Amino acid sequence: NPTRCSVIIIGAGISGITAAKVLAENGVEDVVILEAADRIGGRIRKEEFGGVTVELGAGWIAGVGGQLSNPVWELARQSNLRTCLSDYSNARYNIYDQNSGKIFPSGVAAESYKKAVESAIQKLQNHDDSPLAETQSYLHLLINIHYILNYLFSSGPKTPIELAIDFILHDFEMAEVEPISTYVDFGEREYLVADERGYEYLVYKMGESFLFTSSESEEGKILDSRLKLNKVVRELQHSRNGVSVKTEDGCLYEANYVILSVSIGVLQSHLISFSPPLPVRLSLFFLSPKSKYKNKKLVVNVCLPSRWKTEAISNCDIMVYTKVFLKFPYKFWPCGPEKEFFIYAHQRRGYYTFWQHLENAYPGSNILVVTLTNGESKRIEAQSDEETMKEAMEVLRSMFGCHIPNAMDILVPRWWNNRFQRGSYSNYPICVNHQLIDDIKAPVGRVFFTGEHTSEKFNGYVHGGYLSGIDTSKALLEEIIKEKEWKSENQSFL
Ligand code: FAD
Image (cartoon, rainbow, N blue to C red):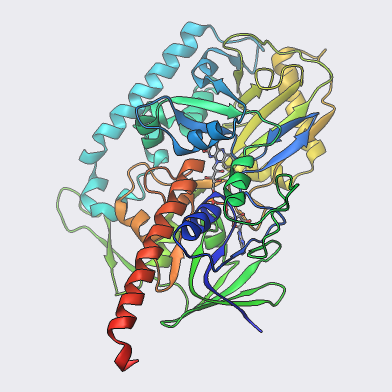
């Protein structure tokens, strides 16, 4: 027999839990939350490693100290979450040369950096004059960060230091090139969460406020039967009358509405089948007849009514971002002010480029973290952890010499191969048109979409997930009220 409720929420990450909380606060308590994993939190996830708590997913509260207060920072303050200020800007003065193992002189590094940023800004300002801009907003989707950075160094970055700077700008610090709402609205500071309860404690705290927990409950011990863990949703049927959802273990749930909070990577992966399928949009390609841009490719969207969702989902990029943790018997890297982050300049872009020591967060932990992205993330996810440790050690020896000790332990998260994530976070093109995000977040009948990828201003961040959960549940509450009103007005016909 199917379980019946008013609203099914798929996914118990920050957006799903926030959405459920807002619904509960507004009188809609008859919900079921279906979570595929055996825990809540989604991409906010801690693990014990090397004697401390490390964050495999979100690690920073980004956007603090501005005029507006970041709501996640507020939640962290209410929970007394322990945090440490991070200053990435110093990383550019700690770039190690692959060949000599020495740090590039600060003048050389700073100058290359400045040029790269100026050049990227210039290209961004000029992009409106480019032939591509003529081709209407759809093609703006294609003008992404790669487009800008291809022009960064006249014929593309080539030397190890150029490649390292390209990597840092592209994969970490676009804020210096393009205003990013998180930093503009909430401030430029970033705080690393360094608390043994983990970043995920914020999600548990929120869950606790509307779900039952045992009286001597520790975090993670939510006992409410409305939260169902290990429930992998595989089928979603929707019609004018309601929705029904089937999980991998054969359970059936029916409701008036569903909120789907799975990541954009999961939506692209077809883990969940939709019946009827999500709408698609047709695109026609033809060559521009205009003389100035003759033979430039134009794209025209044929917006058939209700055929748009699938394309929007497939047009959103996914960033894979992997933090590899390495534990050592003692520290051999420089500590002290402005040394938290350092960069390795290698001839292969993104090859163990960005390093951080955890001494500020956890003094004496002797842990280094190296961040890899996209292709490099996928590559190391596919190999054994021993191979990754070997590669990382070679890189460290080229920076610090052969005498350094071997790592005692390694932790390699696999966000790309996790079928409940399929990537780390959404990565919209810089010059994205608003239609794309509108389409991604727009409901399809009774299916509502939420999650960081649906946040126009803050996608990719924890606060994006949090605020999207609020937005989506409010939109659903309005819909519920409208439906009630309509039903009472038309009762005699029903
Ligand atoms: P999720 O947390 O992904 O929640 C979706 C839930 O749906 C998951 O729990 C998943 O298990 C579940 N699910 C998936 N498929 C199914 C299914 N078929 N059936 C049932 N349930 C399903 N943000 C920051 O602000 N600062 C950072 O420093 C930062 N660093 C990051 C580093 C990494 C490595 C990663 C991965 C992310 C990082 N982020 C950071 C981004 C941040 O973690 C996310 O934006 C946010 O947590 C997303 O929340 P969400 O609710 O939208 O999605």
